[in-house]
Image (spheres, rainbow, N blue to C red):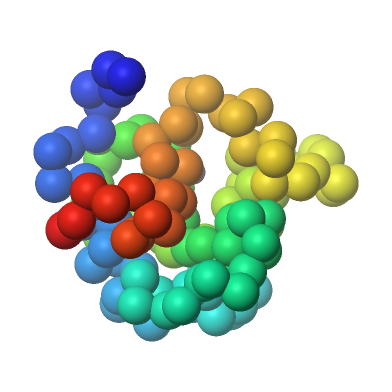
Length: 117
Ligand SMILES: [Zn+2]
Ligand SMILES: [Zn+2]
């Protein structure tokens, strides 16, 4: 499946470093999210989704990967940044933001896809 080419090739590495420097905690609510090394076998897909840290572009410009433009957010907080006016949004509705699709692409739990490192 072709992806929009708005994100740099090293986006995964950039996002990882943002999340690591945030100690895998949401910058807004400070929820401890899952690390790639965490065992998620006992979690449902929606639980994993809720505990997945995402990297958000403060200015909504995916090309702008300056550290000050990037912020690590849990799913709920990330969603609220994109959809402030709605309060009852479930992770299943994330696809409402196609413009930000690659933000969510990194939510795939590592190890599950079998694509290695
Ligand atoms: Zn949060
Ligand atoms: Zn975002």
